[in-house]
Length: 137
Image (cartoon, rainbow, N blue to C red; front, side, top):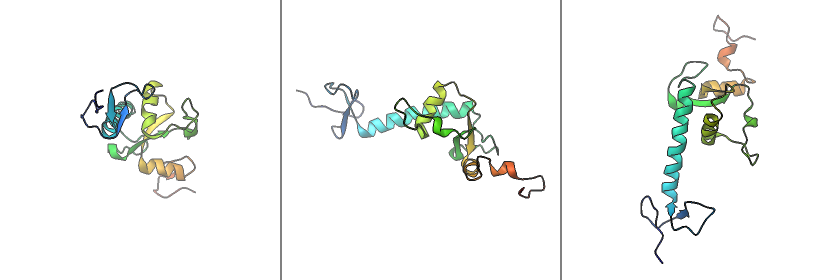
């Protein structure tokens, strides 16, 4: 019987079957290669989703990708669940958004606007500043 090795890097450490439902397969992948493969998959979808929504904060115009995040325009993130009724968020949300056809219920916000919206009852503080640069009451 031949020894199992990662089909990507050849290591025999921390192996997992490629198809978890069929553990009898000889094809395996190590945890490190599996993590790299998953990151590439989600990064691809993140790029697609961010490009579709303009690669810029829809509130303040920030364009540094590292500052941007997905926001639910109607503050309805609790509605994003998978088939097991578990909440879908973070990197798992990007493929879902693409598969749904980039609905208008999502937008890109920088982390400041996203956090400000969360702390200000669903409205970014930029939207509550009056024309004299003083906060409205």
